[in-house]
Length: 272
Image: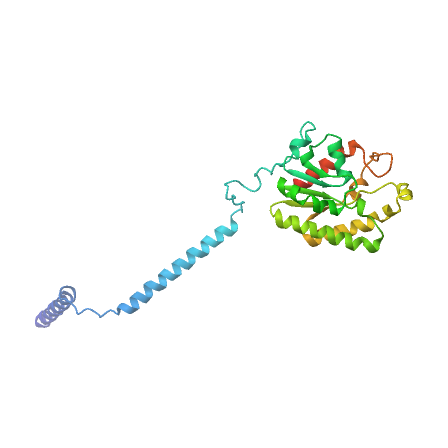
């Protein structure tokens, strides 16, 4: 019996020695390293970078969509909402029309010559004559060009009124004169006045005055074809609550020029 116990103890001791030897061998004897594929590692890192970049871009886009939108500043560094409005460059101060019309010339017939005769503007600011038609405009082309105005107001037609069949001839001559001015004064802004409306009784002594509206439509089309601004005084006259006609029902009074015509011209010039 005692012999069997001794054999059992010996077997246990041998098993313990074998176990410890194997553990020592695993822990302290160098093992052969498993080879690593570098391409697999690079692909893995690249996938991580792509995933990270796309997630960051998505996050930025989400923040931008949620952020309140604000107006960008202009090139001058001010917001469009706070930028000061443009000031008019022609202003009538204390009734000083001469200064306001410093770079403006008015050319035409007696309807605008009255502005000089009433001593509102100077002779070099009004190139006009009683009874003038388009022929007078041709005669004064050099004088107008010599002034080299920034703005030119043309007022012709009252003395050209005739039967409707003759309107096209007048318009053709007028248009050719305007084209000449456009060529010789390329920097000048040109306006074409309508013919002023007249009182009904004036048509009794001047039958051709009944064709004012017809001629004005021709003038409007001419201005459109030439690319100049047409000024419709028929529409303006209908807004008046004051009688601005002289005794003949054709020519306006002085107050018409100071209260209506010249201020209206300034307002139109300031739009350019």
